[in-house]
Length: 433
Ligand SMILES: Cc1cc2nc3c(=O)[nH]c(=O)nc-3n(C[C@H](O)[C@H](O)[C@H](O)COP(=O)(O)OP(=O)(O)OC[C@H]3O[C@@H](n4cnc5c(N)ncnc54)[C@H](O)[C@@H]3O)c2cc1C
Image (cartoon, rainbow, N blue to C red; front, side, top):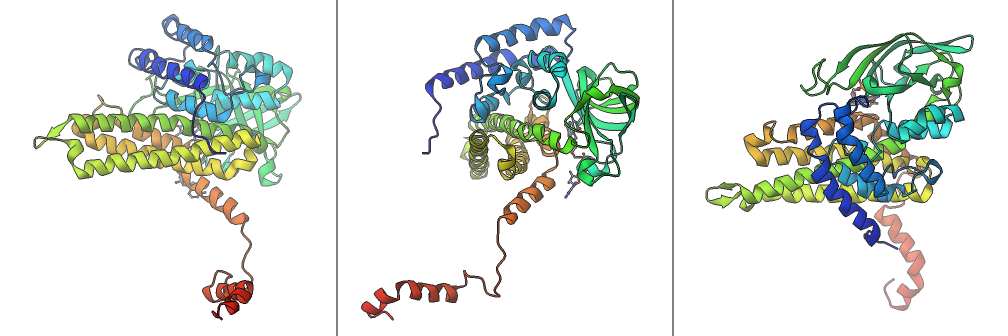
């Protein structure tokens, strides 16, 4: 059964969310530099009432399964909501589903002790604290086998030494989940362990917070991505998540969801770019006619719509398959395909929207440069496009049996012979053979 409709009750919630994001959340970006400082009364006066409204609507942290206090809405409904949240940078935080907290919460829910859940998971789910995922290193992020940040056992503590790079949100986080080398001599994918590191642990040094794309100089509140040095940072052995050497298994718990959630919000951002492109096309005149009369502009609109709808369908199908199988392993190929697709879709649509807006488009009065950079962000975070293309291809090719004859069975003459074998009697009866 194929069905592309949203049930009326949930559609009403989505309509509420759409108005709420446009009217209440979008303006925040212009007047609130640091939305993550939970001790700032100005920030709290703006953010907390909005979070309360989201809770009243039953839309808070809807990604969570019922056993964690969520509604168990599943990925399809989340995708529809996330498209709306993708319009505004602060919306995921106000709806209790921002990265990297969602993925970190998933890890603790799966692998944490009762104490971890009380101390870290509950406040995270309640939106009282933020967290950080500290994995990538300065010398290489795509290949964890290049990692050198290590932890050694000393009595009942792990002692962490080394550097991490692009640990987003570190400066706001109450705790980090750090992936460190604990067993360098073991098999390649058994060398790393995940540890919870409370952010007030002595020895954590933020060398600098790095901004992206010319924004966010070192002192700018928008510089969010920390280069961190762990100087003999001691954490109790009890802070281990999963087994010793089991970090790759743990990482998969968060990455599947994280990737698809980014993609859902990317659809929202790309749709926003397309909406603006179309509005500009029908509003701006050149040679006495609107830009929308120009065929090359029409081509930009048509291509953008087509690419976005194709991508959206792939994404929704993937979300549906995650709900159906409830096992990220069974949808790895689909998730990699979505991960590959999202960068290009956003990059191309934001690029065309910028072009149609001319000088206004390139200026900082318009959001397109930021959107294009965001396309690079989603293309890199959680693994670069090339890696996911390669994963997708490998998973597809794994299902294919090699042909043992020189000429494959789709060779015309071989197929003809088989057709004769199958329908020979009828052919003879009608004088065709
Ligand atoms: C905005 C943003 C936020 C991030 N937040 C976090 C975070 O919170 N925590 C965290 O740990 N990390 C974070 N990252 C880091 C992210 O995970 C890495 O950027 C990513 O894994 C790639 O690693 P790298 O940047 O070191 O690139 P490299 O590993 O140096 O790769 C550079 C390029 O080489 C090519 N390449 C690499 N491997 C292959 C391959 N196998 N085949 C073909 N080509 C390849 C690709 O073109 C790739 O883009 C963030 C990144 C960004 C941009």
